[in-house]
Length: 323
Length: 146
Image 1 (cartoon, rainbow over the protein chains, first blue to last red):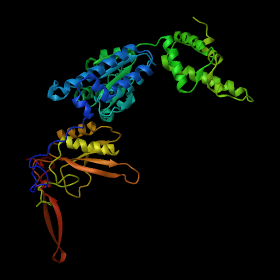
Image 2: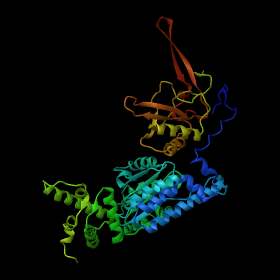
Image 3: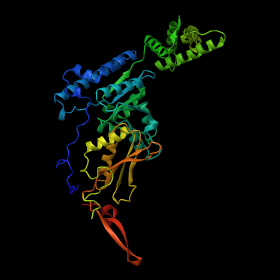
């Protein structure tokens, strides 16, 4: 670099000092107790919200609490200068969510992004949700720019790759998915401070995926398995969903729905909370046509918000013989 | 002769200041992202003032939330073209603006030979003047070898 021939007014003779990196919050920097960190980052509130809003998922919640605890302790260590260069050595937080459909993988990913953001682990805390189509190109030389573009968009936040096992197609050895995986691995390793990658998919297929991509498996620190919901949990979820839409179960409807869940779980293609949501949507349809049929009736608020047992019992699930 | 007293190319923002550090660049990029600009990286070995369109290094980066992506692209461009001029540009896609809102140089060759004034005599002994970059006297691959 050629030095300027003139002096800049007010500027020091040497190179100007680098401005301090934007701190996550003034109070965090001198905190000495767990409570101080928690108070300033408000991560407690997010975790409580997670506990309250998500039913079941005990192992998932436990793991999230562990991660949050680690990050809080890391921050305390950094404040005492215990970490290298006075800066916390970022733990690898790439995760893999496995579980059956409808077990809340996407929902939890959104929450994780918020927790990591509050703890100052990711800078922006947004979630970029992608599938194979967004990463893999259609012709030679298309994949790398496409994958990189997505990665750049996700930086400072969380990259959520749904159905990640589709990235690798063993039956086609010229598939571009492999190229996407390689770029992904490289960025996951080199820009650990910049982004957190969360893979999601069904358990068995993810296992096959990791078997054929051992590099991917070893770079992911947290493999979290989402258990199926129990019938009771599904019923609670149903009530939550109805309450959110200003509906409620009428007399006997809750029991009917419990029966519905019991029968539905035994049928193929059961997708946990998603099936519950679909069932409720259909029940709402039936409730609507029930009210629609009676044209002269004055409808009260209770009429308009109640799901009756008949709306649920009309389901096709009850017509099939219990096997 | 250089077109200014600093002895170095002055185009875009901050070009009369000492080179920005990476942290300072990051802050500028963050500022642009906060304004909703799309950043892009461009490079050239011909810094003539009228050379408006430099070569694009990859596509403009829309919908970014964090400067890390731009910094990654810039680092890659510096690695690929260590002896070229590299600039970051912020495109404001707002309706009615649709133009470059920020632009500054982030990489320069080690030596900048500057520009010469070329005089051409035309009919009636009138003179025509133009600016010529000494760097472009060398073939493309050999510019800024120093």
